[in-house]
Image (cartoon, rainbow, N blue to C red):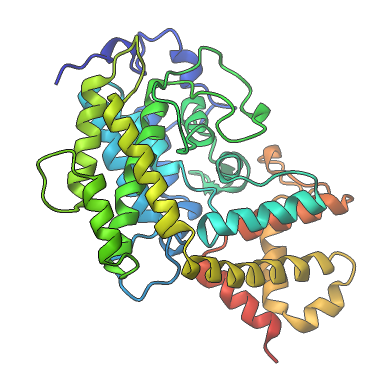
Length: 394
């Protein structure tokens, strides 16, 4: 396949290159490092705790007994695979797509998008700010994830601008069929909502599209495995997907068709785009998934449980701001764990080796509530349930 985007790739010949590889401050040097800037970002991401926790976070289906149902970390790996294939075919920088793809969902809360909605409601009520996982992902890698440097000091991840931009710009809910990068190197803190700006690089655009390609078919495949789709659903789905030669409803076939269509129809002048027919099919699949998977009674009932767990944890920690001794008697493990986490970012505990780690003002009650939201967002499903059980258990 022609590498039609090769002249626009994130390389040293790109006019945006200096901005792409810029970091907030110089990354500590290694005398024997053979990695590029984006490769260093990739390895920093996969060594982070936020990345590791994705293996125990919901993608769509909560706590399935079947080990073959997709978790959040599997989804991330799928996005990496799809974006690699697209970037490689188009002649873009596969090291950059790999780093963005692996970091793109580090800001996801426990219990998937339902958990995200619950945390956002709490954040709006008490802080006056929306919570959304793309922005939380950027703040995770900018402020909260800490890696040990060669001297044993904990440092922020300090990723390149291109990778940070890809994380906050990755919102997969795209309804336009022509995605191009923006020209301006903006302050990423200026993002106020998902999908507010186009990504800065073609590579980030690829990850954004790969995110949708990765989850549409896999969610259907998982729903079939769990028996959520009956014969009528499968009949409707077969009619919907009757656009090619394949006789089976197979996630790999769908992904292959979507990737091929995107790569053969995209061009720097047009942007990343599907053919008209394929784009219409993507929209129809999305409608099918919402109607028959995401909004089904089973998932709606699960959301009630998620709400109980997350709100109980939040209200418990919120109460501890003024009544620490009382709450310590109820669930000491939860409160102590939160305080251990918080000391790394609270200005009572200044660390001269890294001033960027002072995130919250200890004199601000609102900042305390904000810290609770960030802390809960990093929890795995299992850990959140464990802490909830400790709150209610005698």
